[in-house]
Image 1 (tube, one colour):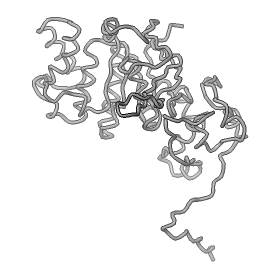
Image 2 (spheres, one colour):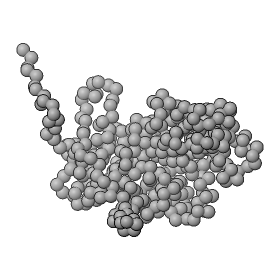
Image 3 (tube, rainbow, N blue to C red):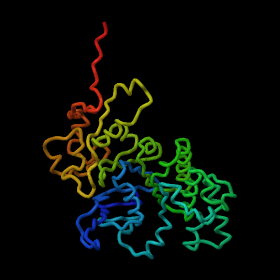
Image 4 (cartoon, one colour):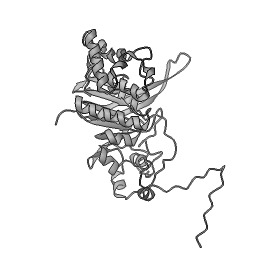
Length: 355
């Protein structure tokens, strides 16, 4: 087997909380990413999902060293890049690029499209002025934009076209690895499909490896080979895409998938929907033991509150849950909760039986 292109070992990204008149007192940390161990194989697309604030984007930026890791180790193509200097990192950035979430904010409104797409080539001194212009025209054609787009500005394009400009900019230096940070979340559904198809075709043509960050489970299933599920800064499950949707193991994954609507009324009526109770805990003060135990519908009196579950293999998947086997076999069922009614509304009245 070949070595993974990206390897993460116990990676942590903590942001300090400062207090005092001069912000000179360190009173705590926001643990945005806390102990992530993960690998991304060459040529695959690893989907990273989780609710807002769980640390997905922070992890993607830490891999590219846009955020400095607090701890752990990041290896790219077998080389430890966790603490290498800026000069070494600069040469390595040709091999790793990013497509940002917001196509409206990630493009400089004062620069033409030709200058935006050609900027990576000029930054790395890749060709003369004529070579750069020729390469920019080729990139715009590859992503489906007309040649005259070179002289136009970002405000003249739609959201989907702007995201294509961002993809062209990421492709300019022929990278091996691209972090796509929710690249379709700000787009209409019809445009989302076009961008996803574009990313897939580019992966085949240029042998790219993707970390695809999203919160839309349907989108992730369409494009990913494997999916990692993140909760409160930690990975709770890693699985092949089809297997995750067919038989999720972690209670958080089960809850997420139970909320995805299925366009079949018969199946929709028969399946069980799990509603998570409570709010996401603060990453500045995560719960002890399993971080999901404050909202878990399968919580048990023992282990969950005190013992941190390890990310362990189970039937071809990785899961961080003490009771994954019991949940899979049905020995553990979700706890039934009393219905909660809005006090401002009258309680529902049962309909009389049919006569």
